[in-house]
Image (cartoon, rainbow, N blue to C red; front, top):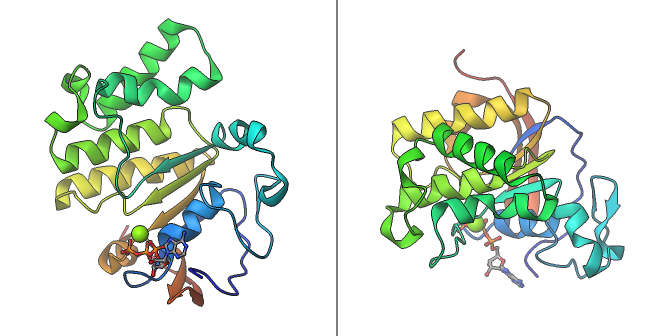
Length: 211
Ligand SMILES: Nc1ncnc2c1ncn2[C@@H]1O[C@H](COP(=O)(O)OP(=O)(O)OP(=O)(O)O)[C@@H](O)[C@H]1O
Ligand SMILES: [Mg+2]
């Protein structure tokens, strides 16, 4: 079992880090919240939806309101960066011109405006990670789940991405950010949920070291 006795409540608008050593269960926790995995025991309520009782056909109700930056990106390799980022909007279905504006806007935010026509395998790991981030936020989700979203970025790109996450948060979004980058946590501050070997071993608020 990947997680045991993990009980926690996260309020709308909170900024939470999930930390812990490799194998602690960070990714598993995020996947449970996104219903990519089903809990074998216990109850998970996300955005008012009880995930144990959410039928497969209603999953889109959750996915429309939550964005996920996957640790392993999960981009579609034989489709353009533009297509990959636009995908979540196709589900919600705004007019095509609006989709275009929004996709180009977020690609600009992550510094990839010139890469819309590239296919993911033609990009560096850090660039792919930023595409994954753009896809997660393109629909302005209420809940952002970000799994090691700066794992492949240099310090400058990390700062810019964290700036975007904070902006998302300041607009009212709830953020769950899994990382083992303690320096990042110290710099940004916030609620820090610590896992170890699948158990909850800490839940504290840290004040930012700067700003
Ligand atoms: N579906 C699953 N069923 C059972 N065990 C799993 C499942 N998925 C992952 N695990 C196990 O659960 C543990 C936690 O894995 P997880 O990927 O959540 O860790 P993590 O904290 O994200 O680690 P990392 O920092 O390396 O990304 C690992 O021992 C893994 O092998
Ligand atoms: Mg992980």
